[in-house]
Length: 111
Image 1 (cartoon, rainbow, N blue to C red):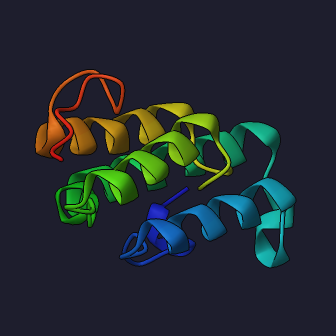
Image 2: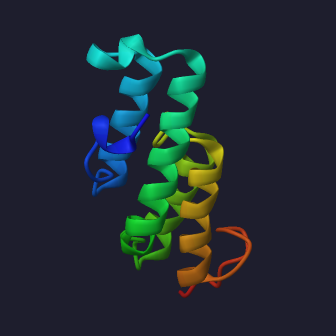
């Protein structure tokens, strides 16, 4: 199965990636013909392509309050609930690269 059969390019935004992952899980449209193994393979291919092409472009908020709120929502799965765990973890690494290691509990808050 070719990845281009279902998506010529990975979605540009993480919101679109999350939505497409949901479509894969739900078996929408032509995705219904995929086996569970085929769905998992497609999810993996899509996640790898998105990580390679767009992860560095993820808009991590500069403000600590906004960044902390997004970080926690991503970590809990409340935000982007359909993404594979490793994709969410890679997103959190982007936050740590901008604000420091260890997540919001370890970031240096400025008064």
